[in-house]
Length: 283
Image (cartoon, rainbow, N blue to C red; front, top):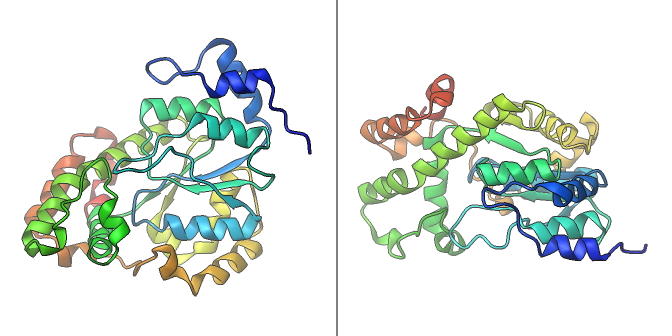
């Protein structure tokens, strides 16, 4: 298949959006035209919300290809990389559908990118204390995870800290990212419900095949419930490889004190959009 690597594509790949992240004029019109060519399945999940597991099942269900959509993690969350998406749309990355799991917030510049390429991301709602508990377990055993922060630098001596110090670090440095994550995605979902699909972790646990079907349909790569169920079953036996820990609800209470969980709830209170979800997110 011939690759349409024309001068316009080359110029666009080396162009920058406006300072706030918006694309305008001919640049925006060109990207809009590219966006109509191919779908992309983007699980924009927070860490420890089954994102790696679900994207693996999605790849199995649709015969997709895993792609990293950001420049690098490097102790930060994901910002989509323009040349990669241009290359994907003109066929430089092969013909399989892009599937990714990216820890990204729906901040303004990311929203501009999502809309420029007409992307249909999927987010996940889960209890923050439960996710932090799972994150804590990961830091204790996974050297790669210990080296990867999330807009914060993990203390290299984390494993030597006292238990209370570990809990304080996770609440002080990582919980604010989670609060902002949910504020940005739930606000975006309210403003553009057709753009964002928000899954619920408890519903995913009860019916992972239904959750996968919903996600793929939203991302314009639909598959039947039967196909989704077969994909889930195929990757289930190797779920620990895909960082699916225990998937239990209520673990956070065994890791964090009532005072620490109250601090998380106070973080959520800064965002009015989270008022309706605070009980769920701080459980």
